[in-house]
Image (cartoon, rainbow, N blue to C red; front, side):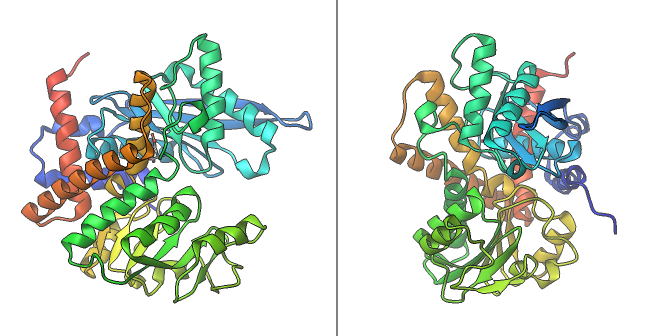
Amino acid sequence: MAKMNPFEMFLKQVDEAMPYLNVEQEYIDILKEPKEVLEVAIPLKLDDGTVQIVKGWRAHHNNALGPYKGGVRYHPNVSREEVTALSAWMSIKCATAMLPYGGGKGGVRVSPHDLTKNELERLSRAYAMSIIRFTGTDIDVPAPDVYTDPQIMSWFIDTYEKIKGRNEPSCYTGKPVGLGGSLGRGDATSRGGMYVLREALREIGLLGKPLTAAIQGFGNVGSNAHKLFGEIGITVVAASDSKGGTYNPKGLDYAALIAHKKSGGTVADYPEGERITTDEILESQVDILIPAALEGVLTEANAGKVKAKTILELANGPTTPAAEQILHDNGAMVIPDVLANSGGVTVSCFEWIQGRSGDYWSEKTVHDKLDERLSMAFHEIWEIRKQHKIRMRQAAYVRAISRIVLAMRFRGIWP
Ligand code: GLU
């Protein structure tokens, strides 16, 4: 069977929420297309003087609730369809977390690890410049995503502000704390996932029981999940990155694994664990499976082999609709991306508010507000799920789409 592209996944997810939605078809038709997608070709001068053309995109899906919001991804497989799907998921995610935003996303088709720091800076500045007509505090606010980080946000905002000739601290989020970033943004996606998971475990009567987890993907989100999830009694027994994974039934020590990676090791060759493949990690004998890398990893080909009964989607779009149905039929619960990983954009919103007001919050304030918001979102979605006897993702989409459509109705269809 042909692989479903991520935008087709989004369309299917909307269709699956439709029977429980009380909205006019024309609004659904609007949500099934991005509003606009900017495609750019960036000539990147490499350090050796040669020029490489790098493709990039910025997609605006919907802005009924507020400015477009979403990260910028650097990855060799980025495509227009992927960025568009990710922007649509951001619309749903921002509405799920009750943020005053629509959905946007950017992507640059590049392998950032192959570039020198100077090349990366030139590319980042060129990208920020080429999408400048699409961005701004009240227009579209980009942030980090796969393989982009606070340093890249610094180059983005510096380019933006120098071209505009003014300071505008909230035109990008995910900045370093020393450049107007928010405390608590670095691990916000994983922390938000922890709060959501804690509430889910509370509901199903497992909170406080000894539970194990496997984390697929060991970038910012996966590694911070490893660091934090012990706080809710979870032992991480398996972890992997794109090169392979490691398994230790007694648990993987976070500090030791990070130290091993810092000294040039990979997750797969961590000496305190048994080497496993990137496929095997998904089939680990654990209570909780945490996909924390890219979309489309749980498919109809492997979903039947998943043993975990709870799937926490810290990545965007890791589970195809067919895989989700199989997991559901096997009694597993998928806590969907639009809720599970919404902590990142929620703290981005906190950063945006702080930048606009000039009033910067303590880390504790950020954590408390994040916990309050995501716990509330979780329980509202949980209620919808119970009321209609549907899956968590359907319930999240029902709540989010109702909210977006309410705003669109007030606005009316114009022009
Ligand atoms: N890239 C993150 C996401 O997919 C964060 C986006 C943001 O902070 O705007 O949710």
